[in-house]
Image 1 (cartoon, each protein chain N blue to C red):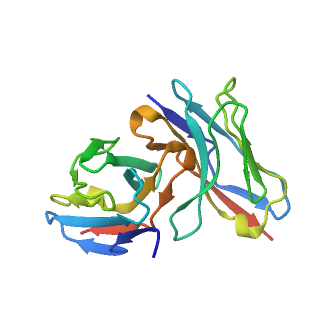
Image 2 (image 1 turned 90 degrees about the vertical axis):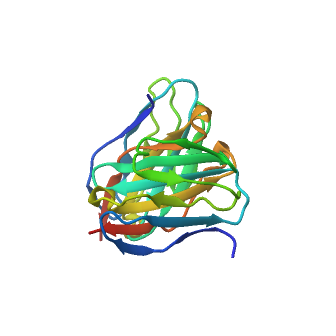
Length: 112
Length: 113
């Protein structure tokens, strides 16, 4: 199916564990983004990518790692999860700024 | 740096009332401006956009005009419905940040029958 999909939809993990959130889009959009959504903060940019093998930090990158070896995939890894990383994570993609962005359904991550 | 400021909610309106959600921005150059809507338990959906000054974005009865002189992009709807209850986010993007969206904190809207 065409679109942008995130997996898993829900995840509970323990402090200190590594966890990877997946994001896959079928349009071959150049730009992809990871945001986290927290009450009182709205959405904050973690990392973004302008093309395969090109990534850059956003507003809150500490504790996160991304890679983009293929245009359609943009996984986000928490190297050693902390409770402050409990959040809802959204992936998005875009061809250019003029077309707006399409968001995935989100991953709700709880770190215990 | 760039920033977006939205009026704080929650906003509670009766059905058929007029809606205004204020949004102002700070950015150099000529950003594109967006309104996104998030229904409970869902991701964000693009509601409308404007890419240059004086452009008016519109969709589903919602409108917003890109006002460069006042650096504003206020969202309006003439008659809200219960189904419009959601969180609304104003956002901007610029080329030099890889077109990443910079969001306001969101405004929660509750429409009562």
